[in-house]
Amino acid sequence: MEKKSTHTQEIFVSEEEKILVWESVKISFEKNFGSEVYSSWLKDISLLKEYNDYLVLGVPTRFFRDWIVSRYLDKILSQIKIFKNSINRVEFKITEENTISATQAYGTNNFNINKVTEIKDSILNYNRLNPNLNFDNFMTGTSNEIALSSSKKICEQISRYNPLYIYGGVGLGKTHLLNAIGIELEKKTNVMFISAERFMYHFIKSIKKNDMVNFKDFFRKSSVFIIDDIQFIRGKEGLQEEFFHTFNSLIDKSSQIIISADRAPMKLDRVQERIKSRLAGGLVVDIDTPDLDLKTKIIRKRLEDIQSQFKESSNISEEVIKFIAAESKTNIRELIGVLNRVITFSKIHKKILTISDCKNILKDVFNQAKIITVDKIQNTVANFFNIPLVEMLSQRRSRPLARPRQIAMYLAKKMTTRSLPEIGRRFANRDHTTVIHAVKTITRLSEKDDEMKKNIEHLREQLLEE
Ligand code: ADP
Ligand code: MG
Image 1 (cartoon, rainbow, N blue to C red):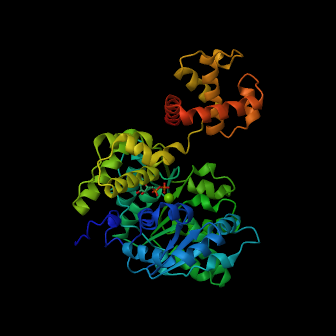
Image 2 (tube, rainbow, N blue to C red; image 1 turned 90 degrees about the horizontal axis):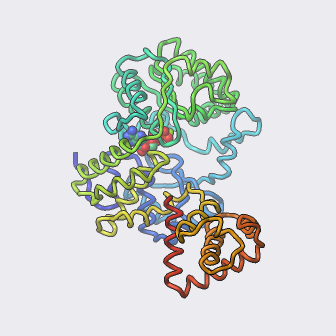
Image 3 (tube, rainbow, N blue to C red; image 1 turned 90 degrees about the vertical axis):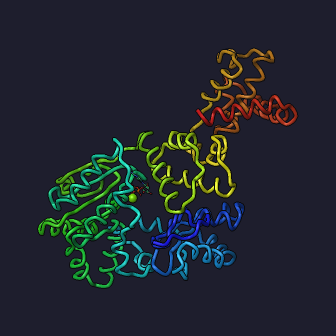
């Protein structure tokens, strides 16, 4: 296999994949349009559908779409072509409006069929297995080993456990596993792999075209039926009805069914009892959040892959690997996003990154979920200045107490969403004008006093890190 060049933009995508890694495309947008344009206009573009020759991209509002189309469309297209040359057109959809219609969806009478059917159909889209999501690059740890071994068993012996139901939170590897099963079984038999959302799309389209016979035939003939994100059917009566019949007729002819969801079968509210009990009737396994060990393994594996694929060393030090693994706590998708960002940064700046570089690059990711409370600020500040908290909050006005108190008020204003009166109340019922005075004083001092500036910065960092 010929591998393509080592150009930065191609780090994550090799020619033969032909499936876009949208995140990488966006990294190239950022690089080519500059961070100003990128963060104002392009950051929120999402990849909705990928076809061989065109893409459907989601943008938040009409205004966004018009702005982007009139100014950046050509350049966007040429960037995308670097990753996938067969693309010669992009379409934009307004995601906010679509999300509303998609969630109201079938079951309520006002579902807007036109919005769904805008997208062109093709058999290709029923069955798109991604060759990069396979068993070989699925790393195991205690959080997912049962899900993995069950998936492999299914591949050895079809319909031994039927259905196989895999559930877990977002970004933990469900789609990856389903896809890996699909790739394996496709070697032996015919496989249908579809998301529940896509299933609904075809369902509604068939109703509209009065073509339910074909729909039923199509979905009931597969030997292996893999359906991703089944929670999507919640609250959609018509869809559930159809799914139930599809499910039964597949089981009747001993087709293997594999299902993923974000929660256990019995926790699927607004789903018919008879469906829930069918879903729970085979083998139910879960995927948990990864531990440190698994996260480290995943990072190492990706670095190895990049290295062997593109014959470049990645410049990511052992301490940075450990840092990323420890800090990325949400899920594996985030972990990989974070890693990509670090790799790209190190390439662009041709530098071996330190932990403190990484902290900077990843500030927004890691701090997102942190909730900073007034309590925490008060404790941190009192600790920092080595004074008892009760003293800091007391009415005493001596400078060694008053300054830290003002700093804590200042930070409370800057780092929480509390209003001035609320902050005042938490400082032993002080008036909001006292808080205003504190904010002004500290702002002024930190502009001219280096020591103050350093202390504030230090406290901020400490609060964000804890
Ligand atoms: P989900 O469907 O549960 O939301 P995905 O299957 O889309 O999650 O996984 C998110 C990302 O994490 C994908 O890029 C996937 O390849 C990767 N991933 C998840 N679990 C693993 C694993 N065990 N080993 C390697 N990569 C993983
Ligand atoms: Mg998924």
